[in-house]
Length: 419
Image (cartoon, rainbow, N blue to C red):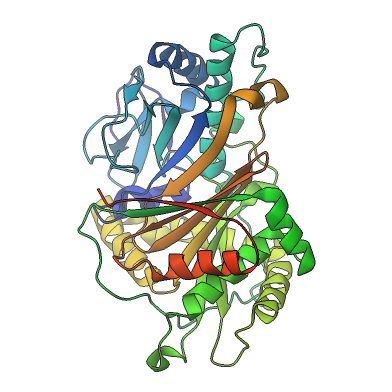
């Protein structure tokens, strides 16, 4: 591996290795976290807040360099600059062979946007950064009301850049079988390459929790079940033998202690066979609830951690040049796309210091996708559900929000035209 003797470098974390190989115009592997304030954003103050925030996350000041066997991260003395939003959400960030930072901070009216290439960090790391940025910004704008950030991310530099996949890689019980499915694929015309449809729904957290309790379940299980039910309405008679499968990313830090700001996530694939199971919501909820209880355990998630690492640890694969690895990862990624129908990412409850809350309207997230993806997060009593999709049809989204409305929930829906 050739590198500048005066620069610092580190390996990409295990999950990140695939993203430079598979990102393309159809899926840039970029996600956007948004904080919408109750007042217009001052870009000059936001720049000062960004300068302070990056001191907490210095490992984000890096570019991707090409090695002979693997890409790697090289630290660079590049100052990230705040700009006014002037591109569609989740536009490409990573450009092969260009030494540019892997994130951007933009603003538009009351919104602060943090967009990041997935090789740099995952949703947990991105959210921590945005929260830090917003806290510094509000402290600068409201110095008498907002306390100095002491923030909040209590970890050393080494801990923040740790590859936790390797830390927890070990031999696992090979008798543990991870379920696989012959999954239904959404069809129809796709939007032009580089375009993405976005539909957003806003609800009351307390009202959704009330409905969840009526079904004796959690909000996440309820919404997963509704998503599956919305997909079922699009499965025609020819495909009844196929399974509606949702990929649900999992923050592995909840199961394996880690303070890493790098990628450390897994996923479970929730498959529901409407050909043999009931279509009523209570039955779907019951199945999803039991599936989550079974699959969301340290033992079963460890099997998925090993799946990430075992290719890198394979001696024959390690000896292959990067270009051959890239070709293999591209092919593997295309095959895996057919293992699921759609994706559901639950970022969960976003918490900020109490003195910041009066100035914040909501948090929001959406992700580029080669399929359809639903992202969910909440702040105070505001629940935001964002669909991103490459399909012209919005039938699944319509079905999803109709089911919510049918449960007596008030949903505020807005749509962004494909850019």
